[in-house]
Image (cartoon, rainbow, N blue to C red; front, side):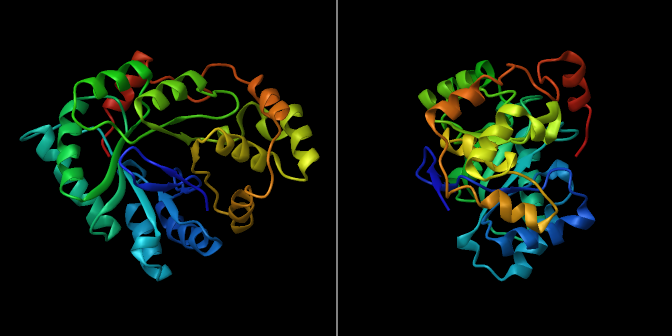
Length: 284
């Protein structure tokens, strides 16, 4: 497995397994299958409601904790009593308990909403205490990311954002590289939207390499040094998604995929007021 080195020296596998939208009752089996297939990087979140199942899968695998890279995410803290910083630390402790772990490899702010500055201050403490080897953010656009960096002590190690052939985030990645932040893709296959799996450009490249469209997309992201966390509940797809290190896309093929960029989300815009209100009202 190839790794990227985060800004604090932590090694992160460039390919992992995500469990977003996998029902809690199916997550343990899916995560067990992923670990059996060879994945050592698992990504979950408090808001997914399946941290316990991920923890159970890790326990049943018998794999040494040190061989695994585990990420979870902090949902928006509303501080009904006390402070956001205290609530953040409680939420972190709850995630650790549900996962059955003593520490995390990566802890992310899930949304750039609410008092995420207080959340970040609490997460800096968590990092300094060694309870999270690295801390980062998710869904942060460049302006909010830069502002967070400029007014805090620790630079986020990762920013996990929607990244796929139709929303390529090249300018965002360039800025992150300047600031020492690793880009990570959620939705790398765009959930098949915009007819991704039958796209003629991607299909032609896949045929040229004897690979699937999904493998071509994952390889394209990896060659851009983007961390990817594809999801599947099918063991054969899990194995297929891992088999992307035995071929290389040419510069011409990389350029062809670049033409697919629309510059817009295929899901939703975090800067849309209605979506901001909807996310802010959700309780994890």
